[in-house]
Length: 429
Image (tube, rainbow, N blue to C red):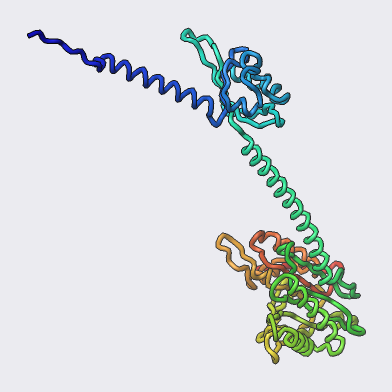
């Protein structure tokens, strides 16, 4: 019996591997080509002179051109706007030549709809012997980014304009506040024969109206009235209380100038005005001056409502506080008690009134409160040269506190000038 040898139709092992490799290679090439053509970004390859040798469908769609119009007929710079061409010539091409590649360069290409912002990345490909042979370029759509940049720029411009407007508004507000603050204080103190007066006002914040106040005005022949005080709070509400307080003190003094009576009247007015709402109160010193030209002295009668004690600098260089214990805040309660004091000023003596911005300033490394003891020591260290000299020294002291002075401060000094040629001494402690 003769036997036949059958041949299988399946390929041998080597043939199967070769077929699989060929199919896999074809699959890769097909996928790469499809990815290249339909990629979400533009691709093109150019010769070293810029002639376009290859371009994908995405970029052609952006340009609104056919492949036949571009490949071999146009250069990369032909796709750019005039500004893009200039930038390519002056920056893009030189950088590409020196570095072999550039990345993320912003350019504009010409499309059927106009210009289109893009980001361009190019890299020079070289041959095996290192010679440059072509340039591969990727083009990314930057329309969303350009819109974002425009919006960001618009936002920055709007913010800058708002800042400038805010600065202008702040300057106008400060000017208005300064005018209003000045209207709450006397423009100048009156000239009183035989008497010297000095004043100073320190504003802690130009953006807020302060509540400190002072005044000096005539009563009748030979008598003058003065006051200095501090309204709680800042801003328009405090300014309203300050205005009401100054008007009330002046009006009450013309009716009855007794210091306790005047402060009692002010307490009644403030309590009645603010008892049903936001409680407003103040501290104040009110007093009268009675000049005796023949005797060469001034008799002082004053009362205090919750205010720091008045300080007297004497012609011999000593200084001391006028005790006014028990004086209550003005405007809180319907019935209050005020403390009165009297003193006599001789030639060379100075009466100093101040608000607590001075004594409550923070000083030194430990930010300690300045205090009345330090003020007493400072005053005794100054030559008794009259009210204006003391005010000048104190204004310098306030300036030395820097940011430790965080409250408004008002100063009022009254006294009799020392006789011409009189010598003064400074008492040391």
